[in-house]
Image 1 (cartoon, rainbow, N blue to C red):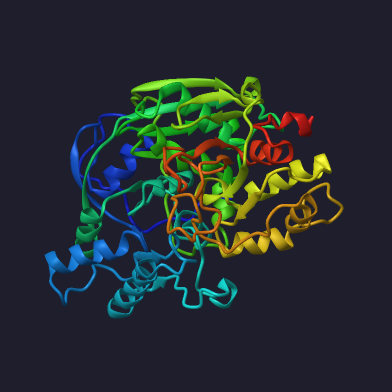
Image 2: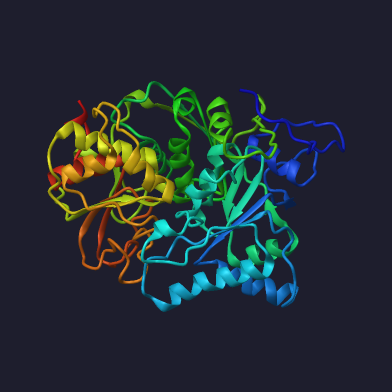
Length: 462
């Protein structure tokens, strides 16, 4: 399927002398420059700005302080506001943050505000979505070739659509709200070439944990991470999102996957806005290139307390765990729950530790209850989870990934050991400062739930 054509023409202020990477091309077009090189500082036009309940109030305050109490945002249709972090809680300050979002959106007539008013039942809030990074994709705000900024470090997730997407702070967001521009330094690009057939026991989470373990949590600091190769091309959009989601755990400025027929097919019923993909030139300059034969990789975990503390899942088989958590922008998408259900189905056993399921969005929650799991004879994820003894899938949100108020569902309030599909395992990340978090794929998380120990999913999938 051919991508939609855009009316926005690339800048033509002179002939291009140097080959460019995808990221350089996107930023060049957004800054109306014929070409850019790493290290240059440029004013970039922003296509979409996203903020949520944690950072929105602060960003709005800075906007009003700098532009005036009665100032209007630069474009009410390019701002997306998504409450998702601290939603299902009785914490008054957390609740107040959502009220501030609502007041600002009403005042500014913001077109895309995914509100929630009734916390007792998320399903009676048709506008409420859930985790911002997954909702951005599902609601059609991610498009190839565009610049998407968000007040959340995992905004880099949207790079899966072949766009420049990165997290910014409240001060920058306050400026973008009023000006629609941001000053950015062009990052150099690291290229990750992944080839080989993906084994049935691996997921994109294993790939990104492998990469972070290889280059460390500072290995891509202020660099673009571009993912290419036959393995990447074989991934569905949600798996590509997982790959880009965790580039920030390597210090990356952004992650990016070239748009292709998989991208265009996903977007077909989600956006009517025109877009124009860009691709790295054949002679583009990459700071480094890393190559992986994915067919030879094994299931990975990141041991406490760092995402680069890489180990093979089978090397941790003696680690006794207290619980399993499946959720977040990294591991709470539809494909993640289908993967977990596949392991439970293959085992036919019940979980041995509490297993918490937190869908990223309302759509994911519906998929859990509606989509049949392949090879199950028509059973849904929810039926398989119930038979396995998991907790009932809860209201969609960021849940306990960031810890949150003490009454947050599945928060670590005791110094327990948890296998989690989330993205960070620093001390205190999911609540308790002495908690031990093992980051893993949904396959490995489900396998671990069944044994009560960190477990290689091949024990059930082969």
